Length: 111
Image 1 (cartoon, rainbow, N blue to C red):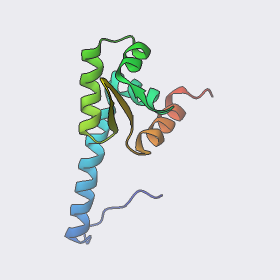
Image 2 (image 1 turned 120 degrees about the vertical axis):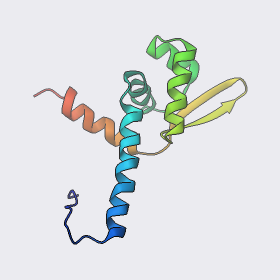
Image 3 (image 1 turned 180 degrees about the vertical axis):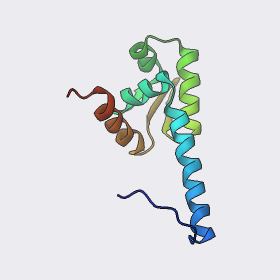
Image 4 (image 1 turned 45 degrees about the vertical axis):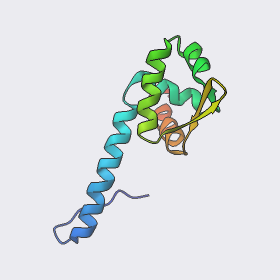
């Protein structure tokens, strides 16, 4: 997909749409800009996890994990599910997976 090109004669409605998309993209990038949130998303790529499982995988306290999950939930990147006292999280859609593939390609893949 090509990146759109701006021009002086672009209709205002199209410029407004680009501005709205830029805001959405910026919020998404802010949500994943924290190492803890990024690691949570990495773990959720393999499937649903409970908060307790995420605590163990991240070697982090429950309060810290819950705070990061709250931000991811606010941005619509994860979806919670309650089962008794346990809360499970999964990816809301394929955006985090696509983003993680790109990050892996840019920063983790060997030359």
